[in-house]
Amino acid sequence: MTKKYISLKSALTLSLASTILLSACRDSLPKDTQKIAPYQAVDPDFKIRATTDFESPTRISKSVFMPNLIAGWASQIILLDIDGALLRTQMGTLNPIQFETGPYIDLHGLGRKGEPGLLLALTDENRLQAFIESSDDGDFTRIPVSIPNIKIKRFCKTHDFITPSLNVYTETNDIVTLGITIEANKQVTLNSNDVPKTDMCHKNTLEFGPSDQTPDQTYLVISPNIKNPHLRLDTKTETKFVEIQDGLSIQGLKDPNSIAVTDINLGSAFNQGAILITDRDSPRSVLIAWDYFKKVVKSEMPN
Image (cartoon, rainbow, N blue to C red):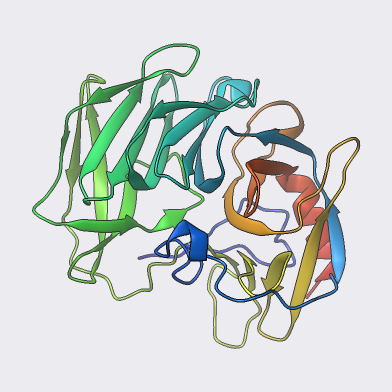
């Protein structure tokens, strides 16, 4: 899997590049035993304000963006709840509704300029389903999908929701890149011409670093922390914890469960992208404007 990076000095000013992964085996545990040990108290090193929030009918385990490259406010957030159902909401409404029961275990969104967005979802039996946007309100219609002779265990998460390809982790523990072809918005074909890759297939961690990274250069890792509350930020030399505090009339979030990021225009306060953070213990999610998040992190972790 090829990783793209941004410099931490210019980091947080340039478009992001990231690999996203699920935190250590949390999603594979039964939902009533996911918190396997009591949290240890930890004081945050600094705080970031929530820009806005929304509430889903159920608690959320994962999320992806589906950018609308013409009308940012019509971009969608697709959510996977703890029971494997799929929900959707447009950025202009932030009112999630369920549209598929599943159960699903993973998802990937693809925005296309002037064309309907595509959603790929993986069932708990590792079968792939494809959905195409079918209305201006963001409704989805299921369409056929053809894949190579591989069994996908999960998607390698990414910030890139506009490139028609994705990396997947297979049952043979290989990482394979699949190209996405959408035919007349009625059928999806995934093609693989790549030999298996040896890079790690991350789940829920965002990595930032120089584009020609060397071992002695700094990088930043952002992840929900499974041992303590708050977001965890790591560089090669330090670890800091970040509290998502209350914004203007917006409640903060003290127990992050999953994260998703894009630097694509999502409209209004999120015209330079957003970081979405779900809550482990409630159906709330918070959105933070990506340019604001970068500015705060750069001032607190400048190296």
